[in-house]
Each structure stands twice: as C-alpha cells, then as structure tokens.
Length: 404
Image (cartoon, rainbow, N blue to C red; front, side, top):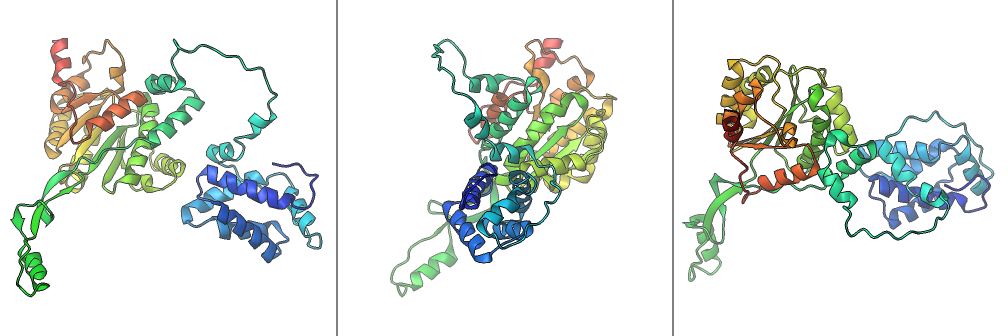
C-alpha cells in the first residue's frame, strides 16, 4: 500500500490495488468492477469510513458468502488509524473525517492475498546463482510424498491448495429408471408418436429409451482421535471440494461419539466450513470408540444415506479403545449396506506395517480395499480408485495372512 504523503488520485490508486487484492483473496472482481467502484466513489461523494465501506461493498460483493471476506480484507487494507480518512480528505477536502473502528482479526488467507507482493518488492536484489538441479527432486514432488504429520505450516497451506484441485471422478452406476437415449434398446412410444405427428403420420421416426446413470452417494466416516487429527483435518479439505462438486456427499466425524458435519461442509468458503465442523464437535482429539460410533451410524443414518450403491470411505487407524465382538458385528453390517467399503489407514505409510492390533484384525475381513491416506500421492491414488475403470487395490486379508 502507498504511504500517507500522497497527492490527488492516491485514493483511486488504492481502490485499484484493493480490487486486485480482493480478486486474489477469492472474490471475482474484474476490471469493470474496479471502474464501477471508482465511478461510485466519485458519484456518492463519500466522506466517512462507513460510507466508503458500503459504497465499495455494493460494487464488489455480489454473493452473500463474499461479504465476510470483503469485511476482513477492508479492515486489513485500511487498518492504519485515520489513513483512509486522510485519503478521502485529499480527494474531497470539504468533508469531515471520522474515527476508525476497532479492527477485527482476519483470516490468514486474506492477509496473504493482500500483502502477497509486499515482501518481494521490499527485499533487496541479490545476485542470482545458477544451480544444476538435474539430480535433485522438485518441491512439488517432495510435497506429494511428504507425510501430513511432518509438514510445516507453509507446506500444510500448499497441501490444502493442492487438495482443493483434486477431482473426484464420476463413477456413475446404472439405475432402474430410463431416459431418452440415442442408442437405447427400448422404443419410447410416446416420443415416437409425437415425432410422427409432425410429418402427418407419413413418417415414423423411432425414438428409444436407455438406462439412466447416476453418480452414487459418497459417505465418509472420519476418525478425529488424537492420532488421526492432522490427517482428518486435511481430508476434510478434500471432502469440502468433493461436496462442492457433488450433491450427495455425507460426512461424519467420530471419536467417542458420532457427529454429522455434512451441512457444515456445504459452506463455500473452506475456512468457514472447517471452523463450523470444529465448533460442532466436542470430542476432537479425544479417545476412539469405533464400535460405538459405527453402531450409531448403522442405527440412525445407514438407511438414509447408504442407498443407490453408496461408497463408504472409512478413515481411521483402527486402534479401538474397547475391542470386542461388537466391532465385528457393526463393521460387517456396514459392509453389507454399501456397494464398496474403502478403509483409509495412515499406518500403511510404514513399510513394516502388520495387522497385530485387535481392532485392525477385526475390521480387515469386512472391507473391500485397504489404502494409505498419509500424503497427497495417496489421495490422488484414491481419486483414481474411485473412477469407473479403477484398479482394485491389494486384498485386505493379505495383512492377516502375513501375521498368521
């Protein structure tokens, strides 16, 4: 941002820069909106901070979910005391200035978007050193293979952006209903007769019906115990992206109890969605009661969300607090209620993993696939596994045979 000692036009320059910052923060602001904002400020004759705020808000904010993001960006951009009032006074000196309001804390994403180029501009120029990187591994490849639990704050932020770009393929399944289809095998008499009436009945153009396909529901059961907290948080970003692209995605968190967070993940902003999930869960980073949570799901939610060939993603390390025969009964009931049950376990990141824990040995015979979920590469493999022409993973019972 420019300094305080400016000349006429400094306010217009800051509006242009502010519009670019909003676009970087996630609000769709184009050159036309910036020109409209400049004209609106000139036409409105704003003289107070509040007038200036709502003038820009009326131009830049087109959707309700962008209102809070705009508010945070505005307060960060003009947070220096009386700075905005001095800019307005330079353009309209006859109008009085007002006191600045107390700024609220803003999200890290907004601050990075607003001041992305400040550090680069302020840094002194250094001599460029050419390095032969033929035998080195790129940062992207390292990030793909790095464990989520070992990532720094900056790497976690980069991983979240990469996860948001993952695309879950549409593994459509055939339904019992029919729809108009060019290469169908059933004659649609109604459409055929209607088409023949256009030619007076002299020509009969057969119309056909084909089987209708539909994307199956995706149901995710995520363990939020202490050992799974870091993996669950990043997988929630993946579920948020999937929920935004699909309509039938149901997410549940479980530790010592089961919590439905499907509605919380429908928020368009990922930060708001995860904050709503955390606020609605009281047993985060606590113990693990898999059998109790699965029993609650099978009793209260299975018949609602596991229809039409649903795919269930079970994300847990399988370290049950109270392993008994109830766990085998509940996991078997869950397996019989869905089309595919995929178990994602971060413990598979270890080469010497063996299914010795009682909870893991109990659950393995009742899952279709057993996959790792500890890094970005594992998530990309999961997306490919959910495609229509997927390749099934290794038999989960293989780990039981190795232990035996």
